Length: 303
Image 1 (spheres, rainbow, N blue to C red):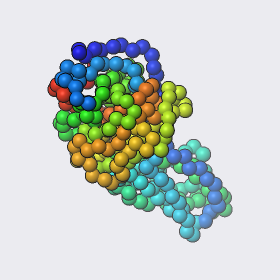
Image 2 (image 1 turned 60 degrees about the vertical axis):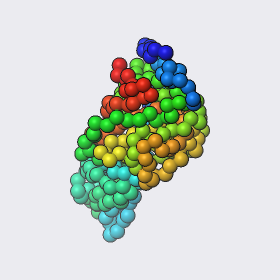
Image 3 (image 1 turned 180 degrees about the vertical axis):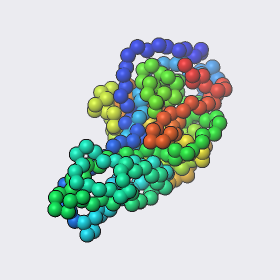
Image 4 (image 1 turned 135 degrees about the vertical axis):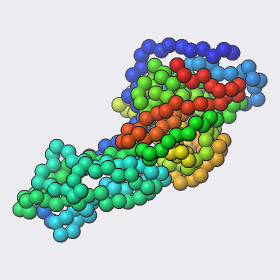
């Protein structure tokens, strides 16, 4: 079977997962007083554009905490991920009567599960209320990472019922920087998902039970697994079934290990597995091109 390239018109996908991105601002505003067995031919995939989606998930890994003492508010940021995360804390427009030391915005790289004091807040006028309007942004990954040239393995068994859907720069939904170099594998719900490369499980989401093409409803409701590789790059496996993650944050996985089961959760047009390789380029999560080996050689992923 020859591999076919189809052109799709339409489909603006705001974000299939809005998970990893993988980055989500947390607004914190307060006022306070001072103080299968098939032959090789049948295994070759046919390019389709059905069952597609986008994976730009929100990351809920950063958490802000406040502690007060003698009129000073100590602001801490927690990295709840089992991998590095770059965080930025800034002051919003509603901030009033607030002095921050160090001054905002501040940006830090947090180690896995690290809690860090990022700034101290104090009222400029001790006799007036301090209104703090803070914005916290967390991006997974180390911005200093240098991805290596690696050939990735299929994230599903080569003998399973899979077809190659959207590739790099897919017009249907692979059109933002987090998903430009993503690949969709059309597989039935419940297909075992394999680690395409060894690494450390960084975060997982598995509680969602449905999916659809309404971005406002489903953009932030996709299940996924994010795996951190030795070179700092991160593999995202998205649209898993409910409770479809078989691994936990901090767990080491080997190449080819079964890590979960595919599904159709989040912003998705049908059952499939969305795989994308991402890096943090400095408070920006972007996808990068990669090579992947199939049963008959390197997959033709570029468009």
